[in-house]
Amino acid sequence: MKTVKVQEALKEIKRGLFFKRLLIHGEEFYLTDQFLKKISAFRDIEKYSLDNLSEIYNYTGTSLFGDSPLLVITEIDRANEVLRKKAEKEKFLKFLLGVQEFILVSFGEIDYKKLKTELFTKILKLLDTVIISEKYTEKAIYSILKKKFDSAGKKVSLEILKLIVELVGDDLTELRNETDKLLLYPGELTPKVVKLLLFSSGKVNVFDLVFLLLEGKKKEYIKKVNALLSQGVEPLAIIALLQTQVRQMVLLACRENVRLPKDVIQKYKTILKRKKLKDLLLLLKALDESEFAVKRGRSDASEVLKNIAFGGS
Image 1 (cartoon, rainbow, N blue to C red):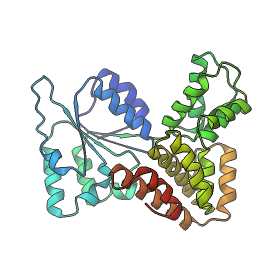
Image 2: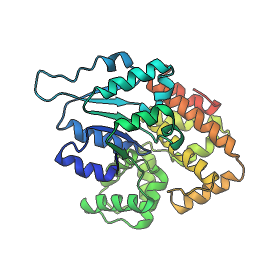
Image 3: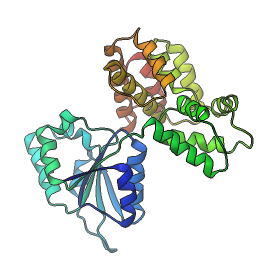
């Protein structure tokens, strides 16, 4: 079994499938999604959530119109929760063994402990390839942004690039959307202009939202969230940005390396002097539960997002 970084996989997939049985997982949701889109451009796929086991088991791998559709199973990171009984696990493993080509997907990183469980150990033995969707380093993000601005004929300084990442966060989907707006501005992109354009377009600094949550400023948090929702920002996009930053703060609290602008790291260190690791973990738990509730359609997305301020979904 070989392990490939998603950036390499995105280049290799242009020449066709280079795997038979694949697992893709990692922090960078956007790159995982881009990989699947590139495959669907030249190959029919049948995508199922792991929650829909009955539909998955109905997959036949046959087609009346040429190549068989490629089986894609999302949310594989929840395998231990969905497949609780021994018989359920054995049935799923036997099913995978009978499928010649498939992709197992997690739109998040599957941690080391989970990969070492009995079920995942057996799943890994069925694979020939694992793709890791790692987040870009801070330096790489600046390079990507610079290339985008350069290709549009706009010259921007490192100061501007850092400001964009601070205001938007390091989520590539958000960065793409927000830089598209900045490219429409006909004049020079100064710090003042960038702040004005991002905030006037309905963008609220994700770092501010994190601080409001951790400081218990519920009314201010809900006010900012309402402003975003009224201007069409997707609740899941906000939750994803919050999750990313809280995870970074957890890593920082555990004295791990984080990929954020230095000034943002300093802000986080300041707030960590007042907050315990337990507070961060409880907030991350509330965010994860909220994301789960929204994706399953169990609750109204906007209400779930607001309820995060009260510690749950």
